[in-house]
Length: 318
Ligand code: ADP
Image 1 (cartoon, rainbow, N blue to C red):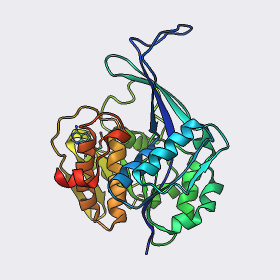
Image 2 (image 1 turned 60 degrees about the horizontal axis):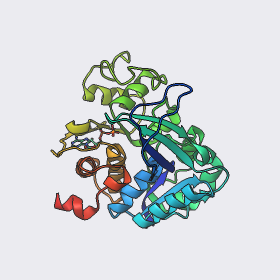
Image 3 (image 1 turned 120 degrees about the vertical axis):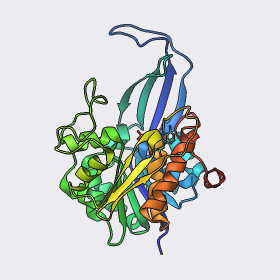
Image 4 (image 1 turned 90 degrees about the vertical axis):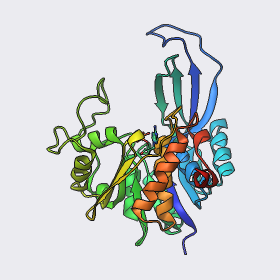
């Protein structure tokens, strides 16, 4: 009775990548490698990942009326994503300017562009898409008020999945709708701290997310502390350690699949998309997470983001 297993509401960016020997200082110019342009943005990535797995997927997003916007629309359509909900114009397509040094470290400047113009009005105008989708997922590369409007407009019986990336404190109204809230360790830390701890050196170091939030220091403790903030369920992703699924019925560990990791870019997007689309196909949370762990593991065996996402046949063959 639903036309789509999954509607993704989120960002679409062109990733402009240049390799450099070292980063320029203030006022300095350095020469870099040839420019590589890749379709990206968490919304577009998750939509492509879900469609490649065979899920009936639509994207609600905004791109500019420019070459980057056309690149994104082409890659979405090639993967099988329904792009009727992708608005065009209003600002240039979002871009991520990425320099990569020889050690593989990235420096990134994001210009949100059209993503910042995906408004609550756009969500209301897409009421038909929302009604046609069993699961609606979002991330935080679009305005928070737009995500709030998604939650407000959710039709009865549909399910909301949030991957709060990049992380920031969330209003109760959004938290209460999440089923599940999907976080990695860093995102768990920021949500539990209740402050925008994304900035500053060392944000990714130190003790676990529970520190300072009155919780313990295991992923199970973080999951319980997050559940207490209101989500109906929580999934914590743990990189090579797999993931865990938590709800008021208990906590289940999802083992990881052992692989030779070459590039972890996009693993979180692949996992979130696989989890949301399996839920949209009617799987239980534990079964959906086990499937998503296989998808995440396959994604780390290949370079890039969208280029690394597997097909359902590749997951079956694993
Ligand atoms: P993020 O990219 O958001 O930090 P994670 O690194 O936790 O997310 O990865 C998401 C999921 O992908 C993990 O829960 C796991 O299932 C899978 N995964 C990630 N890295 C590996 C790895 N090295 N080996 C196997 N599976 C992995």
